Amino acid sequence: MTDTRTATYRQPGVVLTDHRFSVPLDHDEPDGERIELYGREVVAAEREGMPLPWLLYLQGGPGFGAHRLVGRPHWLGRALTEFRVLLLDQRGTGASTPANRQTLPLRGGPEEQADYLTHFRADSIVRDCEAIRPGLTGGAPWTVLGQSFGGFCTTTYLSTAPEGVATALFTGGLPSLDAHADDVYRAAYPRVTRKNEAHYARYPQDVERARRIAAHLLERPVELPGGYLLTAEAFQSLGILLGSGDGSHQLHFLLEDAFVRVPGGHALSDAFQEQVRAHLSYAANPLYALLHEAIYAQDGRPTAWSAERVRGEFPRFDAARALAGDEPVLFTGETIHPWQFTADPALRPLRETAGLLAARIDWTPLYDPERLAANEVPAAAAVYHDDMYVDTADSLRTAAAVRGLRPWVTNEFEHDGVRAGGPRVLDRLLALARDRA
Picture (tube, rainbow, N blue to C red):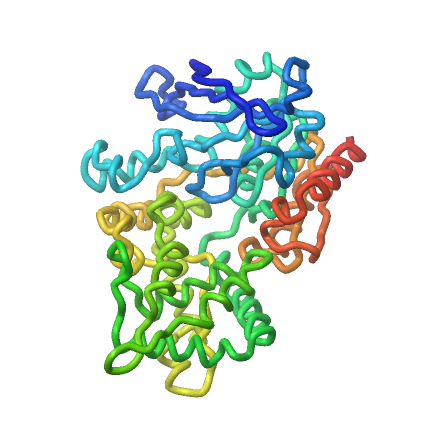
């Protein structure tokens, strides 16, 4: 592993250092092709020269680079009171050898691209972390804070390299150890239904607004700025907002002024279209769409567009059916569908690659239940009782399966509790983990 410090600079209250690391694409072939990772070191300005323990932050996703934070917001301010923090862009995201429609053709055709992307799941991310850790920490283990998919990665970390972890902290990120993607979505659609019902109970005027927009799009799909094709199904996928703390309110504000009067009738306003495009486009994080179902793949079965297939078991999510009767149009949640690789210009060139990944059966296991049952690493997890994205029952089963892990179940926050709760969430998790230790 090569670590190049490219710049050190300051923001209010913090000192930042950019790190660039060279690691193998395939850790089983250490002398083969290499890729570059990027991480941003953050230390409190008043503690800059002190020998502090490290905290590694693993972002949710998959496919999202680490947050670009300014100063000491959210949980970071609490972390900096005792840690030196590394905000790591996981491979393929942010500045870490990004994988997208522009870069993936360098690999060759769809088959070569799909083969390449098999190296971008949690198992490879954890091996990256272990490759860079000794050079940063001097060999000492670090505290790992995993948000959402980052928590999935942390579970893999405890399964494969627990010696690298001093304390494991999870926020909305305890995965099922053995569920197939079909099981995940079969549990998810009822949760999303409840989020819809809660939204419409809060904003009953949105029932008719959503029906009107969906009816308009069933008749006349709209090409958004940048070329995204907004269909009724795409409109329904705005339900991904319902899993965040203020997401229901955001959705309401989006719906309330969707139409403007134009010569000859009404049309979806430019302002509405631009906001919708920003929510639906995967231009900034295409790996989310490409690998989302693959994060559940490890049992020799293909994911085979699981969310799309399982949706058929829940007819209430059929917009045309809802409009034919007197039912509300239900929004979908955290699901990826084949039509998105036609609707989204950022994904269209990757449609065949996505299909190959969906058909793949040779995924390696991500978790080791026996090793987790013998876990010695202090661990604590925030489990959000009303989490739309990660099933609470699955999280609690996994919490019980990891020896010594202490769960904190709360309905005070949604899935983004580590941001909304900030210092309080991190304080609670550290206290729980240390009490166990």
